[in-house]
Amino acid sequence: MLRTLLGACLAAGLLAGCSSHPEIPVSDQQALVMESSVLAAGISASEPAVVATEIQATASSTLYNERQQPVTVHYRFFWHPLDAPRTIVVPARSSVTLYGSANILGAHKARLYLYL
Image 1 (spheres, one colour):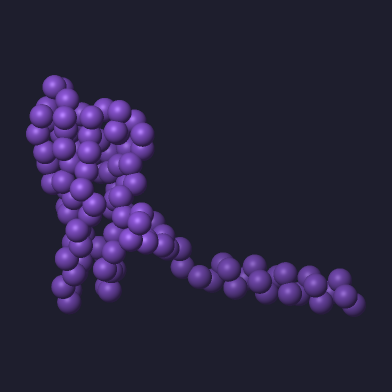
Image 2 (cartoon, one colour):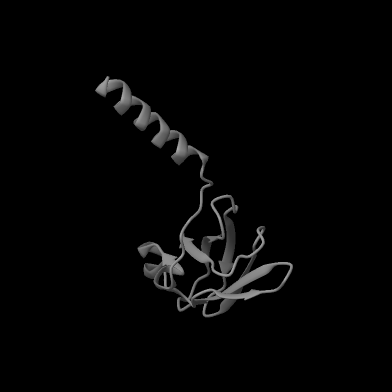
């Protein structure tokens, strides 16, 4: 009897966990995530700034290249786990601004993930 009750509770807990939608929590301390290889390549970045309107939210961040050669950087704005990764080349001794748009209503925070 105890095994049956324990099994039923375990099954209910697993089903409850499966019904929730995937999301990535974004705290104020984790708005910008950079792999160490990006820093080693001479790239620095500003934290994403988010502007939300009634229709859509957009985020922007500026990347700076301190080196004498261009650097290809892959990036992803995480509004939710389905955003596709993108690639940009940051010219030597220059900066570029990245932009991303949320595909969900009510977004007010974003995490930017940078990698080579």
